[in-house]
Image 1 (tube, one colour):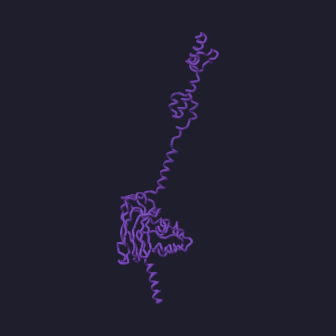
Image 2 (cartoon, rainbow, N blue to C red):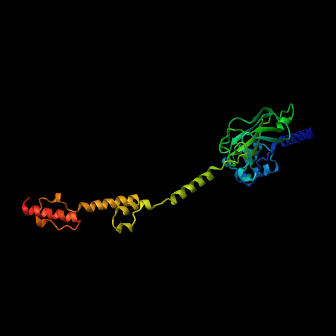
Image 3 (tube, helix red, strand yellow):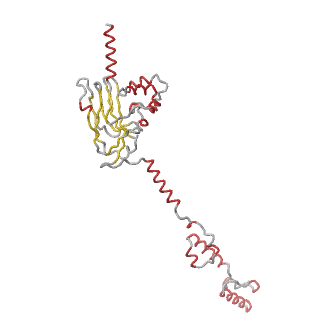
Length: 302
């Protein structure tokens, strides 16, 4: 009986170890140092030795570790595997492209599964699953070929949501309900346009480019129109001089000329003044004649 119990325990352990799955193509996220910093070194060691393991198994390991950071690990997104460890492993797809998947399942455990586009910032599925199974890896039928080799089509309604690396993943998700174990693999990708267009630039790059062109336009704009020339101000005010100056200066020059002209006495302004009160004009000949006329009028009592 003792030997039978031991054998049963060993068989159960082997069953759990073999009851794993992982996407082998396209290349999925791998465990790395960024994951270890967030999820703890023991969790990293566990996944490094067996990346086919399930999330519940990771949590069992993490529960006794002081360096496990729940929020930073975000273990239910890609099993805690980080984009920072996989920046050189990003696929480039376009809308409508068919992507072939290969999944390695080491033992059947009845459950449900799907492949979806996931927004990594919110850990939410964008749109509907690209493919799904209501019964997956059944222990009754065994793993079937269409569960390990299949294709999905990249949606054509993602817009710019997945244009920047790290923003989206194709996530293979298998929840083995019969044993309460969850398996995930994530494929990082960027999305370009249909027909082979290059991926859209990140918003940060586009913003920097726009800012640069704006700065050039501002710094190279002529500034003379909003300044008052200093040398032209001492030149005689003539019609040609005024016409040659910027608008703001011409307005100022005309205002000064008008102000000076208003200070010159005219005949209509001095009919009642005495002769001694009328200074000799220094203006034009017309002004002198007007002054003489005003003086004669005073003398004759007109």
